[in-house]
Amino acid sequence: MDYPLTEEQQMLVDSVRAFREQELTPHEAEVDRSGEVPESLGRQIRSRAIEKGLYAPNLPESVGGGGLDYKCLALLERELGKTSYGLHGYLHRPSEILMACQGDQVERYLKPCVSGERKEVFALTEPDAGSDILSMRTRAERDGEYFLISGTKHFASSPVPPDFAILFALTGARQTPKGERKLVTCFLVDAGTAGFSITRGPRCAAQRAYPTWQLVFENCRVHESRILGEEHCGFELANEWLRMGRVWVAAAACGRMERLIDLAASWAAERRQFGQAIGRFQGTAFKLADMTVDLRAADLLVMDAADKADRATMKNEDAAIAKLFASEAVGRVADHAIQIHGGMGLMEDLPIERLWRDARLDRIWDGTSEIQRHIISRSVLRRYGG
Image 1: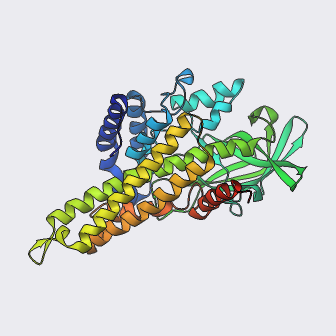
Image 2: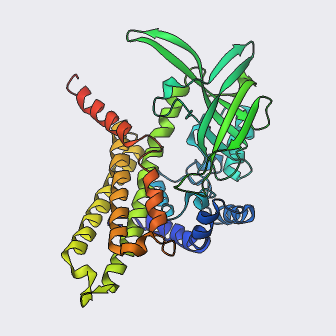
Image 3: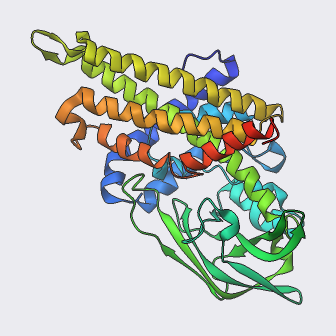
């Protein structure tokens, strides 16, 4: 990474890289083929991550987390992005939304996630409500001190079956000068609660070992003490998580780009055709140049967003710009890497085709490229009264 790092940041990168190379990368091909991480391997990764101080690095030291700032977290996500989410998901970074826990929620949900005893899942997306969050159909109807929740969530990602869901549901509406605005509330719902079922979702072509889960709620009765944050304020909580999630997707994309460039450049220097290394042909050399430019630009956009997050000045458009550029750049880089390798690039013997498949997901999850462009253009127009 061509970005000035402090001594502490470089030590973190070196530590995470060593962990990835020793504990994760050797297993990536097999878990991709099987579509799952063996339970024993998952426990081993989690245990060693806790031992190395790499578990829950994003949460404050006051609750037992690593207390890393956003720039350090971006560097961590960048390094881990070079391998499968199914594996590095066991170096769990609990949802920062859990910092809104109050009272007994801290001991029941927050601290067990930091210690590795419990695992949450973020339940926002629905079959008929993706980027348009407020079109969700999951509802929570108040019944005295309880809420009756009904609806379906899908694409809830977790390397293991979740112990509880961070669930977003409609809880009413209010009138605004622009018309009716739906109100969303966030709930903590334990697996095993009556009326709440969890099944594994369909297998995806990308990140095959990182499963998604379908959550179905049928008159699921949840006490008001399980509201996370304030009633009707769930949309604001979700937006905070989504903003930083987009930066982490961008950071991971940078890691994949670096790995792809290393593979492609090595191949171009060694592979010979017509009496010389293929890297000497302009058609190949210029691809490497374009790949390098894409990575440099993406890295700078990610670190700019992370730096602003550390200074509490990051805006929605900063995260959207980083995510849009990096997610589309990694697609270009992956495609160039395959072209440089020729037919071998599509063979399972090399990691190129897996990285290519995994890269395609980046333009979709945590908000599609179209949504990022909407956020950016809306921000630009707003400055001119549009």
